[in-house]
Length: 339
Image (cartoon, rainbow, N blue to C red; front, side, top):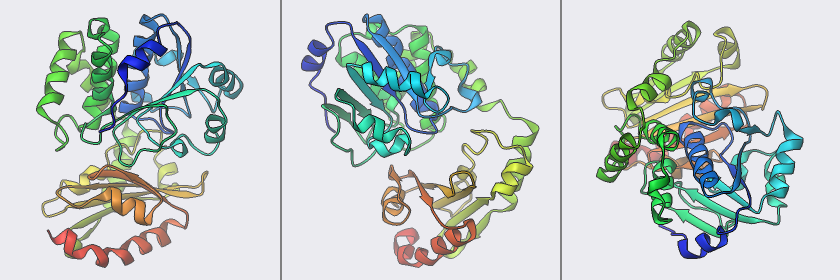
């Protein structure tokens, strides 16, 4: 763990100022939940805080308190750039390398002459931030924001809106509290957030009970495409751009699909390959259970990374060739997968 010098940061934040808060590109529940929660908290301290997202979040997160105030870098570039340039502090949440904001936004962050603060739980953090709070053992950045507010001595400032945002990120990044990274402390934080007003049942419905017919048809297509490689305890799912178009794909529709592979008895490694014609890449999500590190696998072969049991990456060849390459390197990991 890398801990912030809270005394120094609290002193630096003593005078109200302009602050930008940034999630990673293609933000999920933890990224949006943590940034919005921090934004609400910093506003309570008197700061002029704004969340600047690299691009749009899935529609099932649009209900979150304060979502309408988020600046979308893709859609409001000039205003977003002005906000970043005027910020005295830039908080980056749920990522630890500036490349995670995308090629368009990254150089604009790199040229800023401002104070960066990182709060993140992914492995191998970069060193761009003056203040870094990094803990790979914590399940969600939203839990870290709770501990951050606690360390600043301000738990009494957590209201219903902050609680709802933080609970959302913890819920989604733990897979509804089922992943191994969920600890007793996680449950205690979740309980405290419910006491603060988090509407746990409503949040679960808003996140998971919003299927459209087209999304369910896309799920059916993904499951039909699933390939099991029993000799490597691996399950593969793939979706082409044509299939995404056929079933009217919307951002967030493929969220969680990779976990279907991991739910099969005997499978310890699950992967989904999703073609993105616009960006000319294949987006890849990796999941594992047990000791097999998909973080190391993604870093070694697919320009990615993340956590030991959940990581992402990308391929820059065709969908077919990317899958073929993936299969070709599996034998190198047979002994690890057999464990």
